[in-house]
Length: 390
Image (cartoon, rainbow, N blue to C red):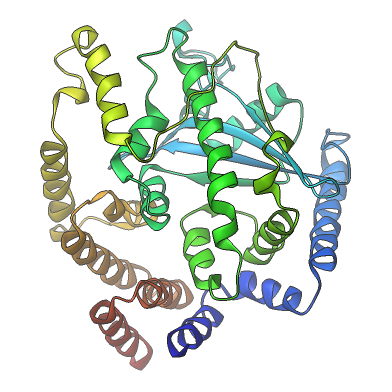
């Protein structure tokens, strides 16, 4: 209990706006909290209507959340939209519709001087910017997003680790497409099936007072314009509606339409399942393909890259935002890199934004306290003490 109280006090100093919104909702019923969310969403839509005319958001009882998986590898500052899924959350019937869009779907990219084969959504996000890419995605879906959430490679691995899923295998499953006759559309559908499975099997574990710090850790791994209070209200609403016992009320669709098959990641035998897929396509891959390298080779290369960057005088801001240390499988090395990135990030930003520096250290202490890593917590406290004493 003492640890939980400590964590809650830490949260109060992290992401103050998001946590304040949650605190305001804390004394309300779930119905009241959700109504407050709907009111905020409608106010935002009204503002967009005044600025843009009459875009389609759907009904007042539906909240649209666009989830993007970004192909953000080490050193990549212009990530592609590698996964695209629109969640339509009906907060009256408490149903969920997930509409997926394959990354290879055609999209015009200004200024229109690219090769013919480059005009697709993944490139639109990278070449013309994420905001433009989102606009093109909304055109294909025929509905605008109320909120946008994105995750990169590192965040997916971090979320898998947080939910005690096999990290490497989960990422490989979500990215794999070569074994399927229709390739990318089947991969996109696999991702939606995986998300549905996680809602059914894991959503309930998020909802309790004790799990509040756990929820906040998961929230911090996602880049989104949805505040923490809104996320909390929606999670509570769906858990109380027993969505996990109503799988038929989580529907999957795709635009444009492709005939796909429901494949599920077998979490108990994920390594064997992935290995069979790789053995099947192995003879057809070039010698330059990543599948020919061991996990140890990839990890060694990643560690060399990270150490070199930390030891250099180059800015680490982009890698910090990508949370690249989460890609390290070895626990001790990952913790070492995480602290070093926080320390370097604080040094880079403290003169320009003291709040950003304090938020980074507070988030670090929160995470390590929640995970029970006492030595790391002490390092974080020492870093905070030095920061506030300057």
